[in-house]
Length: 202
Ligand SMILES: C[S@@+](CC[C@H](N)C(=O)[O-])C[C@H]1O[C@@H](n2cnc3c(N)ncnc32)[C@H](O)[C@@H]1O
Image (cartoon, rainbow, N blue to C red):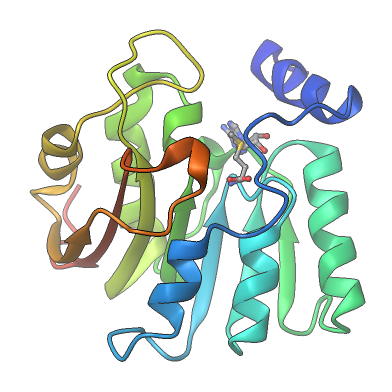
């Protein structure tokens, strides 16, 4: 087992997951209820943690794959799918290292919530390349970014202009706003974006 996997597993084993909001992040629900929302498809939830957003997406009739390398995260996400009666029908899990996933043109949508800030900043362009690889042409990245001025981590800080820079080559930014219903601990420090994949070259 790698040190990084041991590190993330230890949070779940100690039952201390300080990033966890105990529910989905409200800005995702606002988007799902909006007229702009994509209405169907297969969504990959990267670094899905306890599966709150996976659970929400099931309620909106998406097919969902929760991806995380931590065993307990996957168990907890599977339990959410079981409770909804959709496990392995519309709710799937992949217990793998995101950077080693071998999925090409697989998802219509990828959802990001506090996974990007969890990875080493040196891996950010690998992250972009992996998303470009996994999304179908014209697929969407729907993301809630934690905007912070913070070099050490996790969570590692990122600025809005850095986010736009990382994705500029491959994506068109269709929506970008500071949500008004972020969790109180993240109020005014999040950016919600919907980006459409326009260039599959990596
Ligand atoms: C900060 S948590 C966020 C969990 C969830 N998205 C949320 O917002 O509650 C980051 C998650 O990413 C997972 N993770 C970190 N690095 C990973 C990697 N390389 N591959 C797969 N999962 C990873 C961790 O196990 C953890 O569950």
